[in-house]
Amino acid sequence: MVALAGFATRGLEDILVHELGETFCGLSVACRTKLVQFELPELNPVVGQSLSDLKTADDLCVVTGWGGDIHTVTDMEALFAAGHWSEALTVIRDFRVTARDTRNFSVTVTAARTQLGNSAKLAEMVESFMVRATGLQPSPPRTRAPI
Image (cartoon, rainbow, N blue to C red; front, side, top):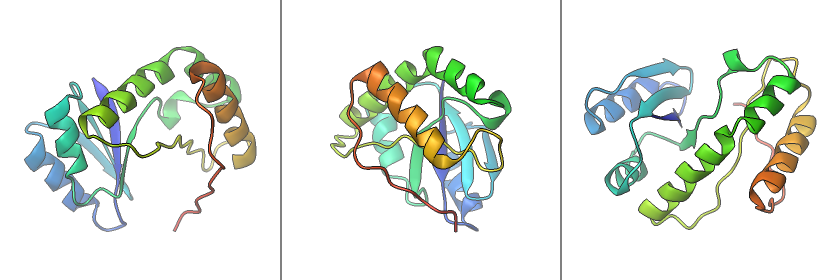
């Protein structure tokens, strides 16, 4: 299973849930403010195109861990070391091929209201791991503030 999350404009989450349900029959979703979590059995060219065609999703991401799984920086480092990133990168690579998407992808760590440290510390840790694990070179960091 591939864990994914779709980001939607506040107030449009139910519409994204409906759109996902029409696109992928029998899909189980969890919804909260601006975020819809769901799993798909696989990504293939048809699924990749269907994800690309979603109208209500502002952004999609591959999920490697949820907040309940990560309580400390050590937990986050263990998540990186466990190989989840290689799985996520495989999904991203396959999606980019199936959707003919040549854009860059981003790595997002959401750690609001946690004790993991400030965003600069987390960004540095994630960047360091990504460079070591994948050889990919980062583009200049971008900070996004919640609306």
